[in-house]
Length: 256
Image (cartoon, rainbow, N blue to C red; front, top):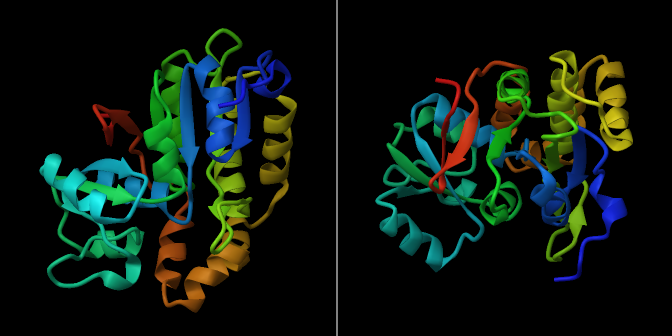
């Protein structure tokens, strides 16, 4: 892996932001913790599942290895949105997770937020979304993080262009990350990097974030394939007080 240049790490700042797995690898090693944001839908689904008491194991791939991993973890396996059945009612859809019985343990594959969460090592990983941005920010500040000495890296997961291993910046993740940053600043964290300050400014100046998410490319994509309910769950602003923290390979609620 190429060495990460110093200028890219936003090192003088207490709160920083970047995109995708590459951004997490750049900022993570010098951070007190990494906050992963994948609004449509990994971290929203994590928040819904953890709200219900489920331990959620991130996994990067939805293939035959995921079933073996779930068996090793004595966990249920989430399937693709359109593969949900009575026997396997769990998927990456937060609306489906809300309707399904809550399992004790769930493997949740995703090529974006889940892959980033599983790849970060050496520092705590937190799953944030629009549903729990304020709760996550308050908890982080209580840990004494989000300072120059103990900086926080907020990672907007982004998507992949169909059929390509190329990052598609996704506005819903940027706004989810910006919501966390805005709440961190409101709770005294900082200083913000220029990138984080720009994200906060755009978030705070947007009058209707839920409408923006509903009508953005990813929101329209989900609605077009019959999963508008997932978008509705994702825009439940600050509806959750859970703080999903990755502990021993699974997200659990650190707030209680």
